[in-house]
Image (cartoon, rainbow over all chains, first blue to last red; front, side, top):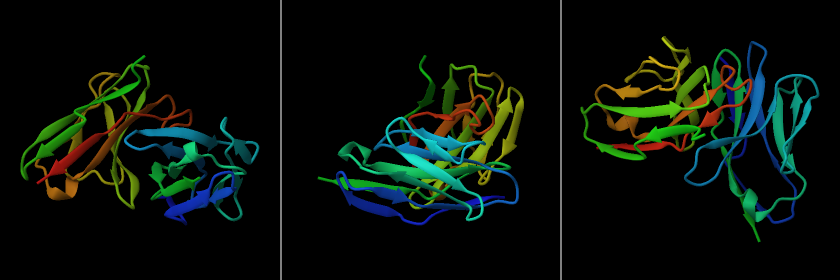
Length: 110
Length: 114
């Protein structure tokens, strides 16, 4: 089965600063990759996904992630964060089944 | 559309009690899944279904049963609750298996087992 490692459990940043949330995976089969966001007391929402094609994928609210097959990574980036980006972010991998990382809590400070 | 709905939102059980967590979706999705979320562990797949009458085990199926008699409903049964089952449970549905399209999540059920 595949596995997912999110390298940072908590990431505090100041508003308008850039941020990178790191995700590495392992799998013996081809994978689809996802980033989900969870706001307090809510379910998860899809942020962006890589299925095939261009390795750089973008969300509507300024996040982007790049699939790097050689490094088995799918890091999430945003050049300038807002207070409203404060949430928990989960990287997920679909191979034979669906596996999620432990999550990274992003806190944006004013 | 209501999307994915879950009931109840909160539940407290005593060890050994049984209960059913309800999940329904009105998007005509074939695929439905149950996850549990525990601090520091992310979401772990319990059971999933690829269509009415078809279910399979995920990563952590022990202590849970599921059935899928209709496309819309996918209940999760705890047969004999244990404190280790204290968690937040999420139901999800999608067109493609595990969201080759997109997985839509319900709001969750917070379960405490005493």
